[in-house]
Length: 82
Image (tube, rainbow, N blue to C red; front, side):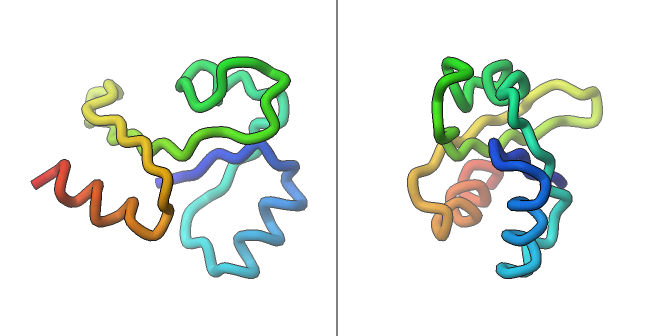
């Protein structure tokens, strides 16, 4: 599992350390990945939408889940996959 953020690597490292983030956190400062995965629409956006993708063994996206509440995201994902 991994996460992608619009923040710079130093900010991501500080976030991961502060909150004990258990996944690799990548930086997408040019927003190319975020635009490709529809978390942003343009390079000018300051924030990305929170989207979780479930990728199958064949590399294809099986599910996409956008959530507004990070605390509820795991429960929403479990309901989706059940």
